[in-house]
Image (cartoon, rainbow, N blue to C red; front, side, top):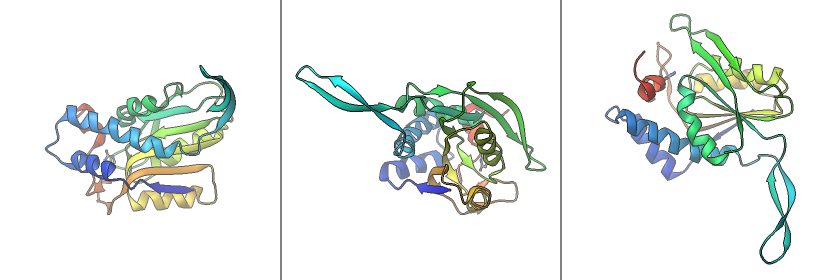
Length: 211
Ligand code: URA
């Protein structure tokens, strides 16, 4: 499993604003979109392409386009939805599937309540969106499901990762080169409630309000 921590001043700047508890909800949403677009640039660095002939006004030349079948973007509901716009801005032709997963706040176990994916996941590159890699349980369930459906590879884009979650993912997928994590930061730790420290709080609540 590959882990890429994006190291760019613009990413660090936007992340600091996101962490700030005084950042308003509309600004938080906007910043998440912008940050995801920057992370997506790194996450798609090895995306599959194929050669294509293109006629310019001057001559004919060979260029590239995204290989078929096109990639699938999979936000994890609910907080991953806030990352979708930022991702599809960079990959407008990608198909989108949804996984509804939530953490039982007492047991910290993952519950899957919705699976809505294109029929033909097999052989396709999947980009999974989840802002917070905390315990890792949700992502392990999501990645495992996509790999079982035959995904060619799974790249997770998250805003923040906790060392505990990364280590669990690495134990689970360590030997595989078809799983990758792209994040803006690896934070210090998880607290006793499973929140990332220093973190940014509950990403879903900050995006959409407390439910
Ligand atoms: N989910 C969140 O929204 N925030 C955390 O800190 C951990 C999990």
